[in-house]
Image (cartoon, rainbow, N blue to C red; front, side, top):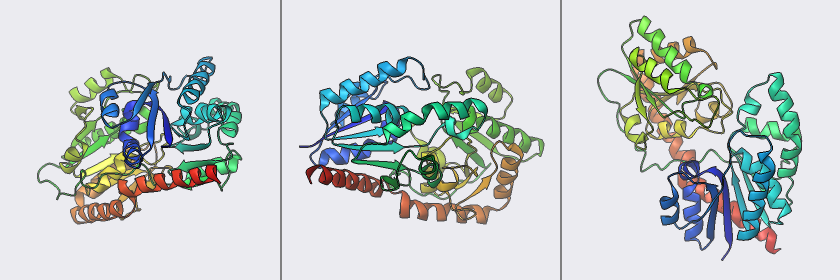
Length: 377
């Protein structure tokens, strides 16, 4: 029995984006562990067969806690003694990658699910931060038996050009997949059209752009409902506030749904799904969920976002930080229902071709097998 250890910053992200891989690995006889910050998913993880190790990862904190977090990663790896470590989200990828090398892990998988704000902004602060982080990236991607999984070509090229990862180690996998049975295609509903936004409510996910587009369409006397699905993220400095949400709701700009697990149901009741993000995305899961539900997508011409659609066939692209362009695109699709429905059907077909979670899981299991072969050779 081979041991697989996932290290990820928080349990809910793992459940949403990687749990099917762990379940398949267990079914194939692996002993699967996860080290993560535990919130409310402990029972689900244990019922799924994982052995859970609590890990306190402070997102965004790059101060003195780095040393204690590095030691935590190292200690858990030494205790578990895994055959493979699979690192997910950027701090586990960096610190966990270094810890895995120090602990002598036989095989390593590093999942770059977006490069985050450090790479999406280009001001002096983040230029200096990238320079400071270069040694961490270089060390984290230096394991001799390692695969680095990217979700979009822009991130892959960025790190290749930066000289911290080799082409031999790099592999492109289109996101975390979607359960096509759970996200089924239904015809659009009748009535007042609904435009949905679903994500963590961060400024750089485009929440304010979405709200401003709603205001613009109201001023143009275009009748539509705007659904905001998600909740603020107090652990992120770019979160929107509860006061902002109340003000937007009172102004009649948006209907608030909070955190929801029935996204497929909400998308099936929507006409358009939009994500005007300028965050350092990997490949936003919400956009492939929208495609699976057969809904036209409007997102930004931004790494990760543009990779989730086939331009003008499954959705439309608008510039980042441009509420007028978003409002114009929404208005265009509202006026062209035949095109909108054609985009939805094409999106479903694309989801079936490349976003099926069973295909994504199989690609990961194949990576594990190849790395274990290298250990045994």
